[in-house]
Image (cartoon, rainbow, N blue to C red):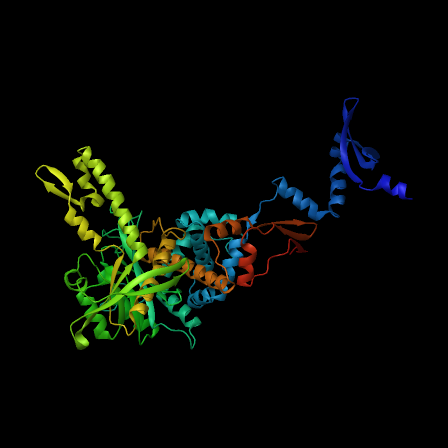
Length: 559
């Protein structure tokens, strides 16, 4: 008995083709291992191949076998390229977050009674998903979505996306006096999304605000596209200014979009005023970058009773150069625990004036940044000296070089006085504040503004809103607002992952999500679906988001 089992185990059966007398014949054979050798044994001759094909017997035989091996047939078809797979990772993950945050419900409630004739909410979701993965224009989005399994998006066309973007940016009534931008549908969405997460612990007493410029490759709308100071170094293009406001936990609250020739200093007050009106803020501390500061802005904030922590311009402010930096009070050493280790700071508070009218400044020196500033300046000087030896006068057109040069007749030389002046600012930063916080708290809150800047870098890289080819302000606002929704989803995912003790590497996660694919085939009255294996970070991220992965293979009756 043992010998018989040894001869007959590891059997495999297959069909082989053999040629005899000028014809091809098919045989059902099996391979049997006998000892150390494998032998083939014919089980049954099937007949001449051409006759079988012509009579349909071959197809009937394959169909009969397939009824008992549907899953193997599907896998074989995928390998042979007969079934096109769709990517499911992104739609599953961000679709769940979309629902959890109530974005879809808010959109559909606002759309009630509007007869668009297509799934507007689905178009907005697809556009938002596009921003997360590759970004680009709505035209490229239409082609991109064909690779993804997105429920309800099957019938969307390019003109649907244009209409959806225009709806998001649709103006609601007349512009209020003093407002830089009209009230739009997207403003109502922001307010309702915030209201959904408002609870007893929701606190907007501290908000962070920063601005950036977004260049247009199109016309730039009726009013938004204007020439102005370009923060992305494209002065040749028209642009708009985008202001982003986030709360103390880094969650986006709202955006404001204004024409590209609007100075940063003119944006802060209208945004603060709108925040109070839109979100019911009674006490707020606004943290903003140094481009926002001016005497008029500070006076307006104080008149409204709004606290502020604003970055000051150390080099251009006469008060800071001549009074604050010359203060003789000793600086106090402080150590901040940061994600990448401790940061050594030296801090002091300087008050100018007395009583309620006193101006309060916080001066900080970061030793690590001071060392980097010295090294960077020395590298510039070394390059400058090498250029001077060549007698290249064209180097004065280089702003990094020009700041250290002085003219002596027809020649240029390094100015020791300018070097000494620059050294005063190594690692130095100055804050202007009226907030009821300690110097350390002011420094920490201002450093948290870096998170806003990181969000902007994400918006202009991973969630790049360009190129914008829309020609109407409303459609442009809707296009950019989808990037805000993308940031909202990304922040929620980071929050969920952080609660599990890890943070995903963003681009790698997107690649891992794209590798999660599924294929569906209808066969024998059944719909059979199979998916690829999970790779990389997907498993951990899905667990953090509370998402169950689809089964490797599933089937259900066809409709």
